[in-house]
Image (cartoon, rainbow, N blue to C red; front, top):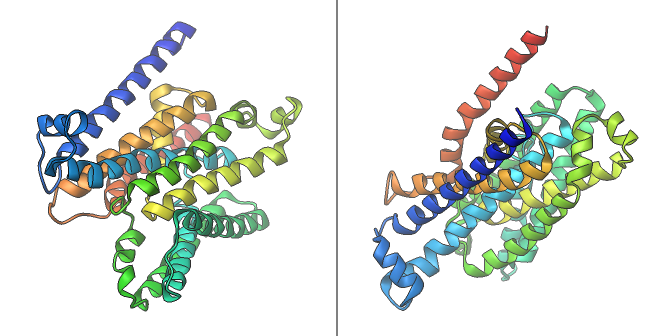
Length: 342
């Protein structure tokens, strides 16, 4: 592929992602248990928000749309960072148990706080989720470093996720406080119930985190070519690894704090973007993964709300249905490439 062809591919792919973001954004605003026409949406957005349609849009659908788009993008970037860290295409926040660890800690903090008559604010939820994510990651890394095998890393991550999820369900089962009636839905993964104040808080955290990821894009590119090459290029590999872990943990923890665990986004989306853009360069993959994660979660949230309306599916149910085939295809493709080299 020539340089011109590569640039044209990048431009085409980014334009495609932008169009899909716009399309699914409009559909998410119009479709739901109450159908709104495009004219209703336009009137509420640009002319008069003090209408029933405007109330639905600004109190329910707009925060949910922004949540799916921003949190989905954050989760996808987190997956890309973990795949870079482990040099493994199936590493991701959900598979490695990071999301489940964050979910467990948020549930514990939330239940204890409500028992004491208080309510967790957004910043405390993020801090609790980050603590849980780091504890889960520390455990998985400790086991993986002891074994030294990638297969053990994945198995340990999956088992850690199951263990944390089981503990979360146990706490929720015996938490009889009426104030946590929505905690079970959150624990399954959902963008519902997020308000404008929550959106402002997690947008600040994610903007900071993704900006920091851009700052380490060049060292990441060297690290992708191997640790020896990175060291010879002047990269402090130990510091880079710490940055990758902290930033991926903060991004996935922020998602878990507000939307619960959302499966397969962090694994499937970066792989799809690698195949679409035909590159591993972080400076391209970071914005591509963020946009594509938003597209994937907007699409999945639309399906979860519309297909069986008024019954709403868990977001993880939908992302698993569409993400699982991608992961299986990716693993088969990698196995085929290994056999070809042999």
